[in-house]
Length: 109
Image (cartoon, rainbow, N blue to C red):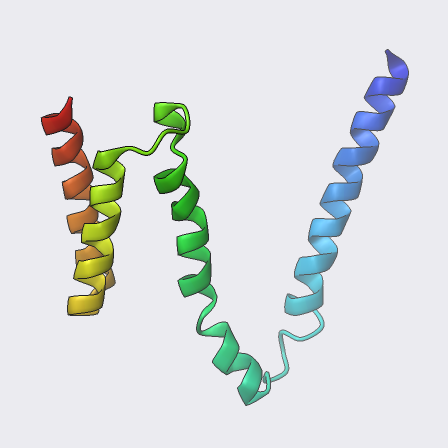
């Protein structure tokens, strides 16, 4: 029982220390220096890469349907992609995608 608590606290402290060191490497060591142009150019695409990585599993394997493909979520994803590509407006595409999801969930039951 005590070994479990010690192991748990070692994991918590280790993860906290690792998280701090990762952030300190960028904020503390590099924060006051200008980054090279090639790094800044690549950092622009971080949000574009992260958002689909977060959303794709929710569309392809939604937990709400026990992992089966859901027409409502797939329709909302298609509407979001089409509106985003057509208008280049992130907020509009997210809003219309969310509206499509709620409308499709309401209509399809």
